[in-house]
Image (cartoon, rainbow, N blue to C red):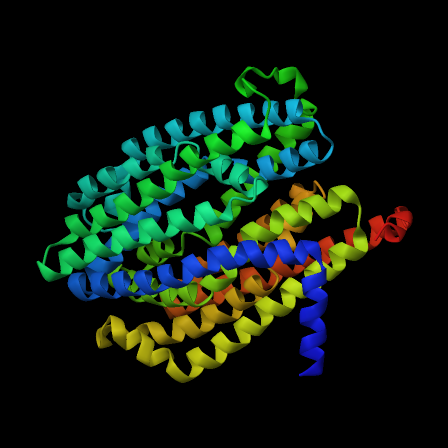
Length: 451
């Protein structure tokens, strides 16, 4: 108990950790309520639609998000990386140029993504939903892509401006509205259309609201008429393009081997198996939701600390957020081992075959969430290429093993492959990031004295 008090006192004295805890607390409060709403809406949708249609719903939503992210350059990470550094160096003119370029690039790629979705919707319905009659559903939900026209850049701006309370409010509002519409669908015994409309409304709110909020932040952070900033103020083109391309390629690999699991299960097996797997993923994602705010609140602090070359502060920061995330994952593991089947039963006892896959997913997801800062750390050091290489090598191995294993052993094999991907790719990125801290602290030992 005394040791815990010492830790808490040290954390309160650490301004970086203090900011993270305050900002995380804002998001966590919102996410706690959103968690309950998400559980409720997911349970109602699962009970209303049944296993197979619930699986189809998952393929529709994941198909749209997959295409959107396929064309994404993760502009939020680029904005946090460069705008934080330029504002720290008191160069708001350069920060304005980066924001302007990011907004234009993201808007262009989002429009291209939507056009691509329109042309591939019928194929998606045939391959993943196993029925071309679902094509209109794929097209209607595809509007959500346009709704997120500049959401990544906007989110990055809000993170730099520490506007986490505003993000929490948006998350809560969309969760409440989505849950309300799904509740109406459940009470009226409506079908897939109204459930899909609920998800679409929530997605549109998450896309448009951050852009509106970010506009206000830009007025405070950047000079007047920031949009007239010259592109000549941008970082060296090769450096900027390399960063954007590396994050895009890394995101593409993660998209194919980590974030499109429902599509792979539907492709190898059936919408029925996708329905089971969707429940397994839903429960795992919901249980680790309290850690999610740490990702967005910690990255700006890591970037600032690296820019200031305060290596001791950086080590302390990483140790403390790791301790918090590890403690939560330990509780989740015990909870799911004891009550996992009961949680699945809330969706309907016909979803009980999801239990083995859920427990296997917990292994890799737990590791990834304990060390959630490994990738942001490399981005702060300007080393996105390594994350891409790690994801590529391990991802190709996962995909090559999926073809012989998943059709034979079912969705548990897919869950095992995903956990393995988290362990090996995340472990490599973790070791590389820790090595960089050690290397930089040797090169700049005087930074330690500045603490």
